[in-house]
Image (cartoon, rainbow, N blue to C red; front, side):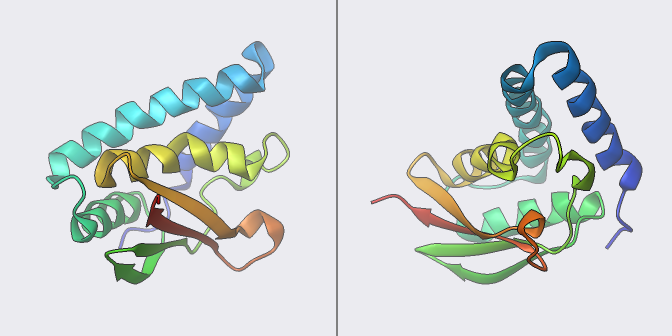
Length: 143
């Protein structure tokens, strides 16, 4: 695995802060949602996957995350539940600027819907910003 790419994540943090100062938090969250859907979508398309395939979800997400030096784990992969953990915080300098739920939604909702399908959703059970040792997202099909 690559070393954590601080310059890569710092660029996103600085763009987020500058954009927020100019355009406000709502506009910045919309901008980041669009930005992540474009950049992650292109990365996932080149990685090759079958939409809805949970094994492909783990493979392409892990490759992309680890490619930028982000440590992640998938302690559970099953047809009805995926546990996806961030073992480090990619955006520690945004803590004072945005609620983690709003920030995480800018990229995680896209990852889940794009790779697994519209019938999937997630719930965050632990977050580094709340003092936990990692961030844990539980991904599951909606009823």
